[in-house]
Length: 509
Image 1 (cartoon, one colour):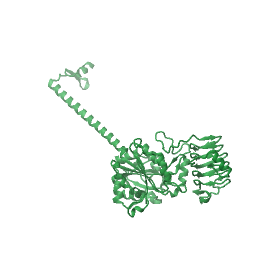
Image 2 (cartoon, helix red, strand yellow):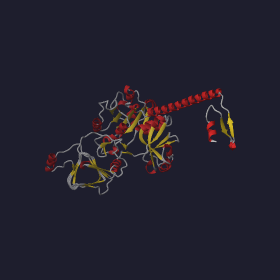
Image 3 (cartoon, one colour):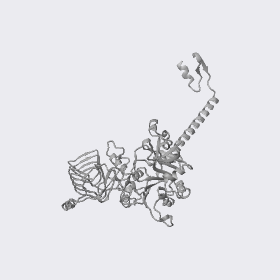
Image 4 (cartoon, one colour):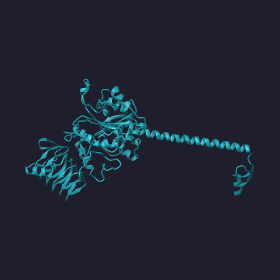
């Protein structure tokens, strides 16, 4: 039986065919013309198969090319908004711009979007500044010097300070996020920006780590005119944000600024559309704008120059109105993000860095956070107890106790000092032992914290001088206080020791 079947399989010879019921029938040998026809058919099938494979390969190659083009960072320019007055962060913004405020002991807030741009391959960056910008400008020039264009991939980092221009309108300061970009919209017509397709709008006071090119790729592949980065949030936080309503394709239909009650419930959406699991979508039925946007360049210029020439703000004016006319898409960012807009959020975000595990960490070798190169030595810790804390470089800790605190660069903490729930921003310079000895001999207070001092729930700004036997604990639970002459403020129950201030020996706050 096996031999017959094998013979039937041999082309060009008589063979057998097994019929139903095991009956064997002889099969005549095929005639030569039939073989030639079969060969021609075989060739045609091979050609057809090859053509189909080639077409499939071409489709794959085209898809790959489109994906690569969607991730082309050379056609993206970032604009970081850093010109706000930062009134809610006062007194930390008393003499510095909000993006220049220290974070995490060694960084500044502006380092977050700048590092995200660098890690995303975006090397064309504008930074808009207005209020108290001296220290911000100094930090940017030291940290992100782009005079060597080869090292920065022929990109640039440019600070655009608010300036007067011809005409009555040119006498105004920035009136809002959109107005700030409008005042420099002529830069997008420059020859070096001729290849720019999309404009990424960022804020200078957020803490998060993000690959912006994932956002850009989604924006381009979905054919969006504007894309808005958004967070899924629950009922407890929804009323603190601008909330968006979307359809089942992720298109933004409407906005509501900090809604409450029935207005809030009306803004619930199915967040599984944006990629959340069903369980998480039930817990977080709202999406909030992060204030991070992508515009097609031509769309942005049209909106600023012609469609809404008097609108001042992106989030409250231009984008809500545009959603009714053009394709505005939501992009989900389901990771850690914090708006460092108030003293309370600044304080809590810093202390959260010292938790284990932290919600956000600066320790990521693949996507590091960059800052100014200071060439400081390691910290010196002598007979001290440190728990759940961050100690930056260049510090001197002598026989002290540090609990759940962040200690900034060049900090000096004396014997028998107890810090708890404290954010110490550090110092801009060192005092030599000789200088410190002379100050003490004159009854003055050197930089840092003197011996036998106890500090709790406090922010200590840079270069502060806190004497011996001082107690800062706000034991009376004061929520708000302005004591400029005494060197401190209290905001949301948190004591803030002012920059360059002096707290005399024996003071109790």
